[in-house]
Length: 174
Image 1 (tube, rainbow, N blue to C red):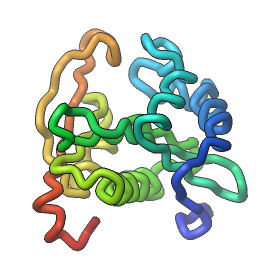
Image 2: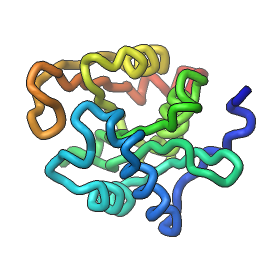
Image 3: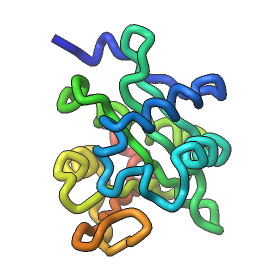
Image 4: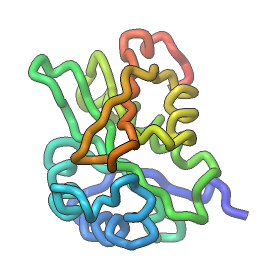
């Protein structure tokens, strides 16, 4: 049985970028996104590099194998108050074991240390009930749903969640 205690989550360094790219390019992972990353305007390679240059990547390792990742796009507003956590992917054998929650919490922790933002946002697609449960459990609020043709096919809404970091300072959960 796979457990989280055997998984190491850490901030990726430049030497990890090829492994992240290969991981996201695998059909098993690429097809989990509602619009696959390979079908979007920005290439997977550019996505990995840009998020590394502007933010950070977290990687989850199991026996020296990358099994999950989560990106941070960095500061996303002119006032430098909003940070976006983005791209998250988990290999099938490691899903539904709490790894998504762990990556979200660790992403929040690192984003707060790096940027001290007022707000942290994350988005997903409207049919991703696991992400919605995780975001709400971790203190995020559902902000809005909208159609984003760059990310989602017609009929699937993008859902944005926000975490109030001022309120979070008093919360012992994250």
